[in-house]
Length: 177
View (tube, one colour):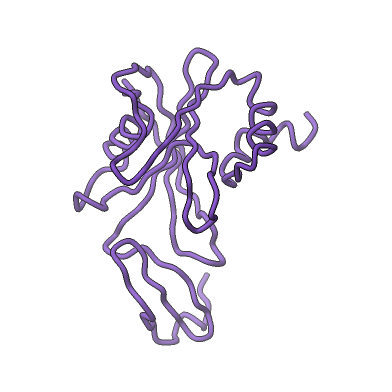
């Protein structure tokens, strides 16, 4: 399927290190330059899931998320599996023995061209404290799967914003089954 609007010239309105603002016809959107991709990590072990909480400048508030990160932002051509393992250890202090790609998804298709690969990390071994790099102050939460709904409600009540990808964990609870 194609759209005649794709024939309009592509304009770059602004470009930074990690994002570019593009315009095609009347449509403006954010784009990842230099083939930078993202991975979102479903890290479940022993009936617990790893979640991270960090302050997000665009939101002006802390945000609860699944561990995630950019792939190829520092090493051109980085494999998604390798980058996901690196990001998981950097953010949470856990090293996986296995990572499986579950598929590629669009984060917000009306606003950005960004796609992310959802991966499942298993065989988790605690090897450090996590917390992210020097620009991040990530808090790691290891939450029982049976308590995820209550934990999310508790963090929301404390003023923490919820990342939309947490809907993956809430699906059955939201739908009533």
